[in-house]
Amino acid sequence: MDEAAARPALVDITSVTKTYRMGDFDVHALRGVTLRIAEGEFAAIMGASGSGKSTLMNILGCLDRPSTGEYFLDGAEVSRLEADALAEMRSQTLGFVFQSFNLLARTTALENVELPLVYTGLRPALRRARAKEALERVGLGERLHHHPSQLSGGQQQRVAIARALVNRPRLILADEPTGNLDSHASLEMMALLQQLGDEGMTIVLVTHEPDIAAHARRVIVVRDGLIERDSPIEAGRWTEAPRQAGHPAAPVRVASP
Ligand SMILES: Nc1ncnc2c1ncn2[C@@H]1O[C@H](COP(=O)(O)OP(=O)(O)OP(=O)(O)O)[C@@H](O)[C@H]1O
Ligand SMILES: [Mg+2]
Image (cartoon, rainbow, N blue to C red):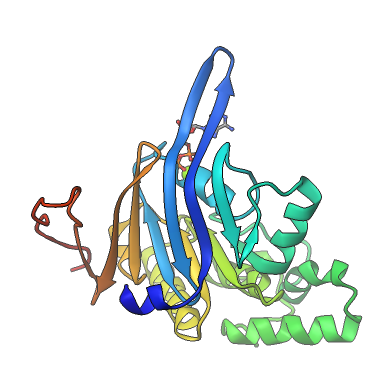
């Protein structure tokens, strides 16, 4: 991670907590997370159900604010921004991909991808050209006028990736992007994300599957609202970091066959 540490942090989170008030109880979803992600990194977040992955992604994605702690995104402190400013940061800096694609059904691939540009003031011809370019980038140049129902699951998720890319974001956030795909389409999706990573895009994805995480270059394991492990992935493998200074590292964990 030395190489990554030398680059400026795109995501810089320090001691972030998130507490939800539920009636008389406090739910401590994040209990002090410090995390830096450099430009160009491809990181996978793993962890058991309820460990805080989506809460962390919501904060990373400026959909929610930390209860305490700091978040600098691309050098700007976003932890204390008001809703409007957060929304603007979101639309200018971030691209989102969801488990359930979230495409408009009665709309072509091209129109779906164009949608985030509608409010940017770009001229329609330029919007269309940018949307076409994004669809070509994900290998769907031949499917511009198909509706979602005329596309496979993997192709629909590629449309969603094109839609995330069309604003030229600095960071792509994907929460379980392969959750609704079969294993073949999942592998294609990961190959596409790797390709975007190789082109310099910064990507953070949440997954439950070690085989999917193994396609990233770094794995961050969240447990009970804390980062339990943060390791580089080399050739599909990662090593368990020692929990405390002085403890020997746990055995190598093989993430993929
Ligand atoms: N809006 C909310 N209000 C109250 N509690 C919440 C809220 N959102 C999440 N929580 C709680 O915070 C904790 C972390 O939830 P989170 O959704 O981040 O988990 P997760 O790791 O994404 O789980 P999963 O793998 O099931 O998606 C859980 O105990 C959850 O019940
Ligand atoms: Mg979740």
